Image (cartoon, rainbow, N blue to C red; front, side, top):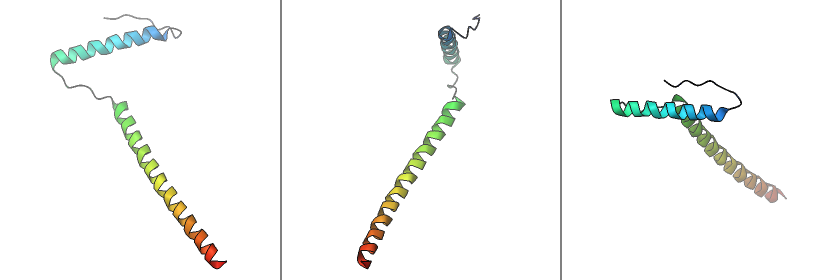
Length: 81
């Protein structure tokens, strides 16, 4: 068992302990032939990225529509003059 105290000023040592713990868990899972654990935060981040991409696509489409409408309005104004 790993015994470590946490010193808020020494986060590097805590990172090392976490890496060792994760490596140990991974090795146990390989020995037991268990499927890898999917991190719920990774799934959530993936969903957020998809939403961002969809919103960006929508924004670009709307921007193109606005430019088209502005060009049409300018043509109409020129026709009236």
